[in-house]
Length: 432
Image (cartoon, rainbow, N blue to C red; front, top):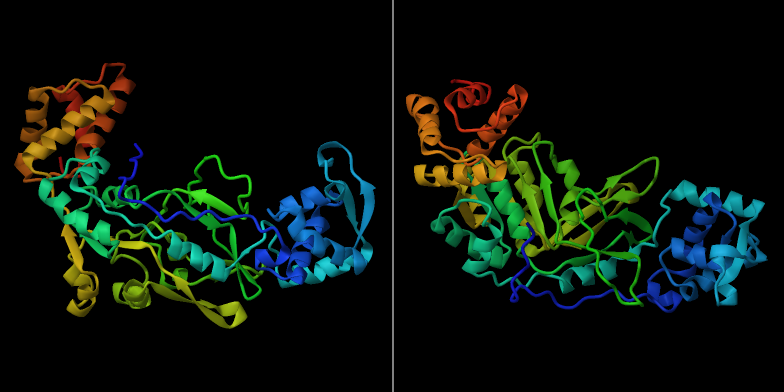
């Protein structure tokens, strides 16, 4: 369940406003003309209104670029278009068709890059937006408790989590698997403030880098101002997780040799939210190599990105809270000097017997299974105590999920009965 951020977790008001003039877009006329030409190459004819909308820019902003294409003979007007393209503005209703010389020109432009989408936002505007939307979180114990109410955690653990969330400081969460480290990190993203605006793509000295990623960015449906800049999208503060597949190469912009534009690195997609390095220590790249790559960004809030295909580097804002989650002891991963850079190291312990029972009771409600004292004791006496098996926070729900599926297969109501518990646990635990 989504948690509304506390009133104190405000974000300085930043709303991207649509540029009224070409110069306000931050892109030169020639750049806009090339973007327009790529669109009409794939779909022709187009009305001026739809042509501008393809770039997510107002007609008034792209008018000089359209005129430039016509003057150079790359496009031609075909009169006013009827149907959906019709507009009260005569200029917006004019239809345009790409010419044969225009097709040749478009192929030259596409040879440089195949980006066809909303006009990119200049890097400087993106940088300004990130700094303007930095979370001013002031999370109280009550708000943190509410955000984590779906977990059974000790008060001591909650008290430890509050300061790094408020400071957006790097954090090590360590402990045995299955006790909620990933879920804790995800819940923290809910507390960092209001939704933020990000551009679909960024222009870096003529190079396009795509930023918006529906895999990592969840759009927020909200009434936006009439003069909103449609090159931007409103998203929840991101929660971006990188697991064992992460390498240092993935922390640099990736260049697609076929499309000839860049994809933003994963940590840039996490700006304004949480960047979780899950299962830290089991990546192909060593922990030391990953920390070496991130240490400047962690300390200075700036990340130097290399655009290898263009032979340039840029200092990008780094305003993500970085969380390292590991099943290993932090001291076994990196030396003391590196650990000092990550000031907060918080152990997420196994649940106590009382907490384990509470988790089981909560899971019973979720699966609509009646909790029974006899069933609970049977689980402990048969599958935990003889093996000195440690409790894990994930186990009650996992066991009940198995039990529910077994009962369904047998055509029986799911209950905490010994034979159903046996069938569930024998297929869940390796040693049972």
